[in-house]
Length: 248
Image 1 (cartoon, rainbow, N blue to C red):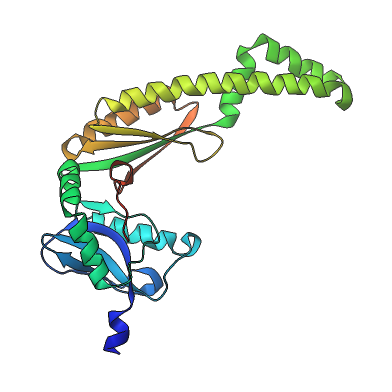
Image 2 (cartoon, rainbow, N blue to C red):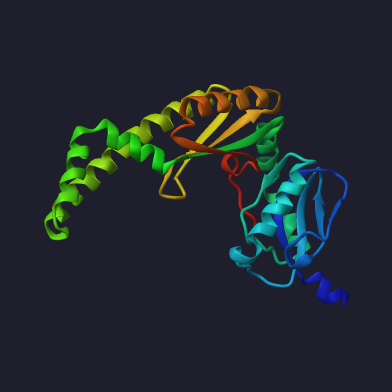
């Protein structure tokens, strides 16, 4: 039994600064206990893993929940999903190999939090605004309704292009304005690709904890300005956007 235990893989969630071993309970993949493997003043948060790979569809949420649970107590370096070092020694070797790099990352993250802001269109509201603000779009709408489907087809293509262009210009303007407004309170910022079609801003901000309230006020200011056109999703997240390191 001890021999099997020695060769069991370790699912890697995140890295924290800690000299003492800790157990976070049975919240890991496959319901396994989450605990630390320590090296000097760093600790890898892991659970035993029976498999060498995992499907993000089935275990991605578990991974995220573990990282969020650890984040309540520690500043951490999150690891990407599905990293399974072969043994405890491999985990310690990883900590040893990247020790100085990780210590610099912790200096960068100390006293700070990542706040994610996603802004999406209220499509019915913005479409009404685009239609009402363009004479050409209004005319095309009337012409399309008055024609047979065959004759209306080229007009529909033109209408689609006009609407898409207007939506793109307006979205870029609003996104840039919100991004600049929120950037003033952050020490780090990053724009990511939108993850759904109606999203115009997907951004992350690294903010000093003592300035979180000030950042909240800026988000509220942006909502007051654009809330009739867009919806805001605003969350505290592990700092995936401001660290870059992979396990073994």
